[in-house]
Amino acid sequence: MAKAKSNTLKLKFDSARNYAPAPESKSAAKINARYDLFINGKFEKPASKKYFATINPATEEKLSEVADANAADVDKAVKAARNAYGKTWKKMPGKERAKYIYRIARMIQERAREFSVIETLDGGKPIRESRDFDVPTAANHFFYYAGWADKLEYAFPNRNAQPLGVAGQIIPWNFPLLMAAWKIAPALATGNTVVLKPAENTPLTALKLADIFQEAELPPGVVNIITGAGATGAAIVNHAGVDKIAFTGSTDVGKIIQKAIAGTGKKATLELGGKAANIIFEDAAIDQAVEGVVNGIFFNQGHVCCAGSRLYVQESVYKEVVRKLKDRLETMIVGDPLDKNTDIGAINSKEQLAIINKYLKIGQAEGAEMYQSSAAIPSKGFFCRPTIFTNVAQSNRIAQEEIFGPVLTIQSFRTDDEVIEKANNTPYGLSAGVWTDKGSKIFNLTTKLRAGVVWANTFNQFDPTSPFGGYKESGYGREGGLHGLYGYVRF
Ligand code: NAI
Ligand code: MG
Image 1 (cartoon, helix red, strand yellow):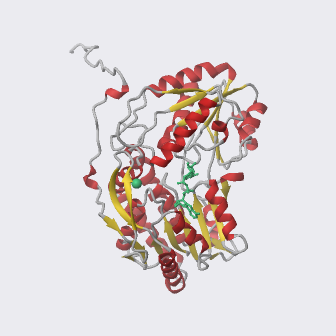
Image 2 (cartoon, rainbow, N blue to C red):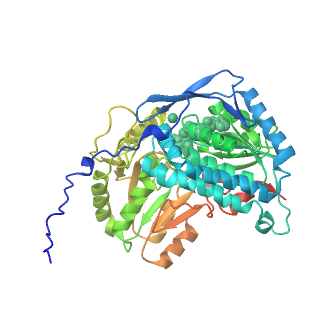
């Protein structure tokens, strides 16, 4: 028998950044030079006659231009949705609606590669994330809610749940396709029709979804996709023919929407900002916890409403955790989002990069100590190195305000009560994470942390069957799971 040579497989990794490039091909992405508005099953020119560009934030190159819908366009879309609601969708048996929703899910799967590449080009997120998370999770939401469409009497026994009518849905730029799926799937399953507005920075996957609605022969007007910025969103919110507003975005705009619909009888679900605490106890498996913290704050460049942006570490393991985090930061690859090696892609926009950089200055001025990895970053496009702040005070703005970037604050604590108080000392309450070996500690904290989702020994886990939503200034209403149906029915 041949003697095994022990040293033939010596792999050399001088530094993580020396991997050979592994770019995904752009050829899967068919992007038109211009997109009109998707109203009543067809692409129509906007009454406004205006268009604006959407760019690739990794290269600053223009990808396409999309229509800038005005109030007249919104009115047309709402009328199409109203008409489809009364004439077809509301009357259709649940098991027939389910077939369309199921078909949409299958088509997203079939075109997963195209969706992933477009999502990454338009928004800057690493292809690994759009391919392995955004697109499959979006398809799963349609599959899951297809299952509910003919079972509403089991979801709400003896309550005769009825649809609301026309849902106006406004979504942000951090998970464009996934947020569209979160909004559209439960609305359709419960018999509502939709006017959806994607964010102005990332409209392309929602417009691709319109292609799928056509191919799936979804009845015209059941879903309308309207592009535009804040003014278009406001026109949807203020349209008298809209019965429900579903919004995901900043707390500031959430407050504007709440004021605008007060007294109108419109229903609303608001999924707003966050400043989640991620808590490491001394008995935790430290290496796993460090990985969880990295995933919690650097996933999608930190553009995540439930990002674990405030790390609390028990004093006895504080030094070890900070050292391991700094080592781990050094291995993270920042750069071309289309490269399969990339861990941190492009910041979504110039404006968002300016917000992040403003907070980096604020943090240093407040006396916190900033540490950034030495990763090389491209000279073009919008990029930010992974950043951690130590020596942070609870009252510092970087520990209180949502930065929405790859920036982590770290503080220490001694006792359970102390960390619960610190974790809850925020205007937000969307999510939290707890890392410990003790089940009893997990139960103690999950009952006391004021957050809609608390992950234990993991972070950023999503499943269509599980409800998601916030407390306090993180908004109200739940999306996902059986709870996600409530926002779209009346009794
Ligand atoms: P934004 O809240 O302005 O945008 C979200 C969506 O709302 C977009 O589709 C936008 O066109 C629309 N919109 C804007 N003004 C509106 C209005 N008056 N009425 C109706 N719709 C309106 O968020 P923006 O300005 O892009 O980001 C600013 C900050 O907001 C970020 O730095 C981040 O902290 C936070 N944010 C939080 C999100 C989350 O998921 N929690 C998502 C996006 C932003
Ligand atoms: Mg873009």
